[in-house]
Length: 228
Image (cartoon, rainbow, N blue to C red; front, side, top):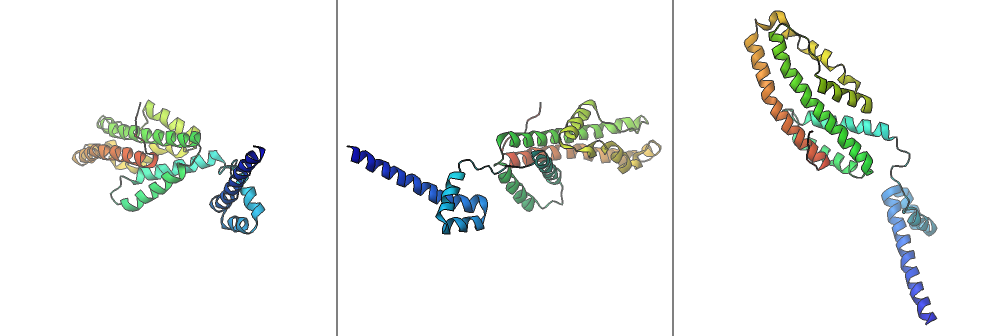
């Protein structure tokens, strides 16, 4: 009876050792590079070490997550803003989004959710900004050319600046005034038809952009975008 138990234990030990040894070689190539993998092939103890190490291996040890999330937010902003543009190479952009989506899918859940939330907050800001911009026409008609964020847009900007350092969003109202200085009060009534046409096109494009935001979010995070 003892001999049988010993035989069973030997078989279990052999199987476990083989799993650790082979798994260590595979792990070396996959997680530590070709050099480490070749080392594990020719030096069995190294393969065994890697086989044990794979149980506590952390791909993101030492990662500066604050910087990484900020960089990734900038990437998702690029995707969000580029997707609706007519001149965009959609096929190439979709490939880039799919590659990015695959990369972030391996993040720890808390960091993945943080990136997802940040992207959603930026999209919300973009929608709010379009509303503010379209509301600017009524102000100009009343000889008020001041472009300001609404309260809900200010809240969105504050969150994005404090969490991800997107300070350029604070400067956007001034940039908008400079870009559209031809719409000053002195010229509004002179070019009213042209300005009305411009804002009507902007209103129509809002639906196009919003639909694009939903598709982009879905492609990156494989989840539907919902607003509060």
